[in-house]
Length: 337
Ligand code: ADP
Ligand code: MG
Image (tube, rainbow, N blue to C red; front, side, top):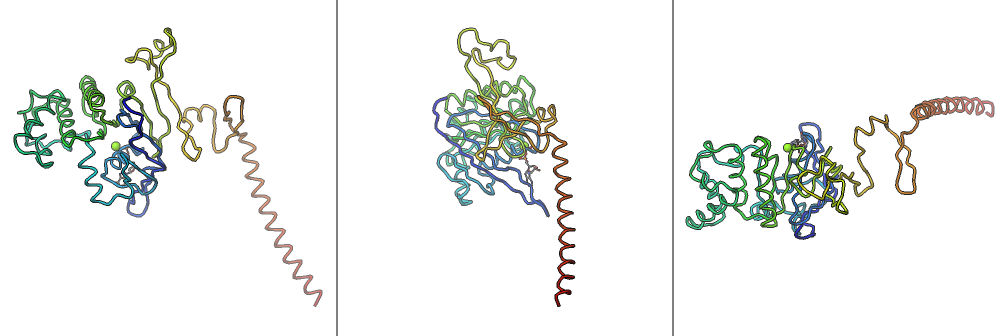
């Protein structure tokens, strides 16, 4: 890591979409801090809020509540014009479908020249810069080919070159390897990795790739619009660490991947579903303070049911007692007349 500085701070971020007559809460109080120059992977099932987060971080959409700062900018308070400037000056996007990244009737070079021209580059300077960018992503020899003549992997590398045209500080890639085979995916990860290390480019990659952790510094998992866990690399102490035995340790000798559950600012955490199912934990738990941690145990289910039943009975009785009392009061009042 080049610097430990916090570049992105998401604090209790909420995004609500209004869909006809109901609200969809796509982000539900998401907390996340990303360091400048970090290469972060984001995983999560479909509908968990990954794209919503990317759109908001990219200034394409605005959060409903919470706090969001990117490079010192407050994106919640930013005006629409501010968001436009932010997006154009700071962010590069790579989408899953090349149709969203590339113009099919332009060749590779022209695709990169287009945003450069919009950014004010003259023809010669634009062409030179476009060639440079194609070189950086490894498709320099394909500059005069149309998009349809490029392979899926080449199209995505060209898309990365386009995303770099505005010289961004933040590169957002939403499932960039979703439509390419494994070899091409590896190639794309390598391009991201080189860019990240060479230019200290903060890079966020959304992916379904189970091996994502091997290509990034850290992977966070998002579920129901919140970050629930993260995987980080840990160094193995001593020469004979256990890294070799851990299938997750491939690719980074002397290090292993450690998975942590995230505790949010209100002290909430999400317990993995498998754990809950295995211990049949539902509704309530018992927390016990131990010497070196907190033990979470299933609450006794029958007790819970009884408590609920008792409560209803009690309320019934109280209601009946109340009615009787009212009748008695009326009778007593009559006698006193
Ligand atoms: P992911 O990228 O993880 O698949 P999304 O961020 O696209 O998830 O979606 C999160 C939730 O928000 C989903 O329930 C989705 O249906 C909803 N959603 C996303 N975008 C919109 C939108 N523009 N309007 C309404 N609902 C949306
Ligand atoms: Mg998505």
